[in-house]
Length: 338
Image (cartoon, rainbow, N blue to C red):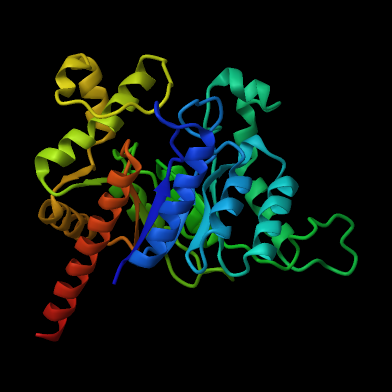
């Protein structure tokens, strides 16, 4: 059955602070482990008051310490922001602390605004060396050679699995050429989803890490007991996107009854274009939506974002999603046996 995983935003809300966000992420990961999710990823973001995952590796250690078996990782680290040896040191340390459980997804974008890029002591041209930086990072995770002058201690020999993240065909081509698993960010940039997946599969070359293509698809899923309640919960994410267009990256806001009173027609069009792949509704709606997405994309794994304001409602959403996905798997198995 297709694997199901979680991308958590480590949200700071109007009713919580950063410590609450860390603890809520850890609690969600512990529940996800029991519900059968395969991975729990967070992403590097900077200068965003509503997202507390800037020190990504540190937050991942907090999450991993509260779980036992679920894989934890970055989805992703924005590699142009860092020297590869630094990231190797961070994730090699995590791999020593939590062996066999660490993933490292790599993104080419800075993941922030231009002013913050300068504050990070990077430039917009840093992304030009992304392919070379990926190879350098991969080498740091390999066993050190006898005459290797520079080692990423304690990363050498950990062989932390790398993923390439993307929202266009660029990442798909790079992942294919390097023989790495590929994750497409259709939870906020769905336009080139199928083209990117086709590009990845058609150009894939086997590597030491991966013998055949492995594609993950990111998707927003908001589940609740009824379609109406799920649509209401989804307004939190819709407001976040609207605020981003307005240049106001604030704290996560509680859901509202009528989103039409919040955004303009132009803002709605922008937000709905970015959220076009979202699945929002009751367990039946979610089950049908997940099944259709898998048929369309042939994804090996789904990475779910359930951006819900209230922690208990978010837990309930992920539990319903896991149950809907399991039911789809059972139906598929019954069909195969028939």
